[in-house]
Image (cartoon, rainbow, N blue to C red; front, top):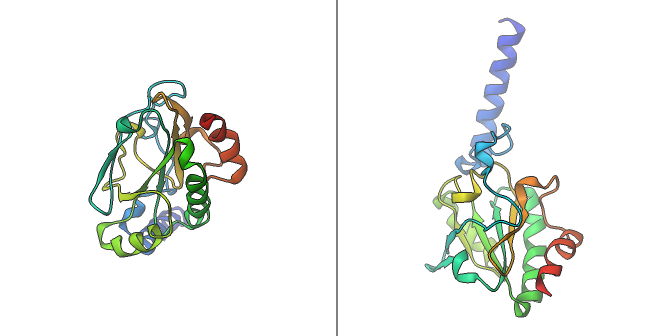
Length: 185
């Protein structure tokens, strides 16, 4: 087999193997570069944030539109995402500490419905509601092609931080203090 054909075959195999290992919810995350359209080109800091509804694992629905007056973080994650395991406990602690100042976090899992027990197990330790996204498409936020990715909405419903624009999208203490804490004042 010619080397370029073998290389394509090896790439195809590695993608297939990765998807089987990571689960169908991977949806190609990190395997291909997204097009501008996939990144929700209309997202712009300072402009109205697209509305999104979280259908929680305990049967409630929470709309970002109903959270006006609060600072809202939308976090997209999955049980199979290593960086998410580091980020989400930190985000949960921060959210609990700042809930009385009007912070709300909505967690959208990219896991498949068959992984609901694992999602429930992880979410049980967190201070914010979680639900399954249901597909890789998150309305006006576009196709979720990498995780973790987060978006922050200010008290007026304006996008304050666009996760697609961040080179290091996972939350750290420093990043939370720099981006979210000023919005809580």
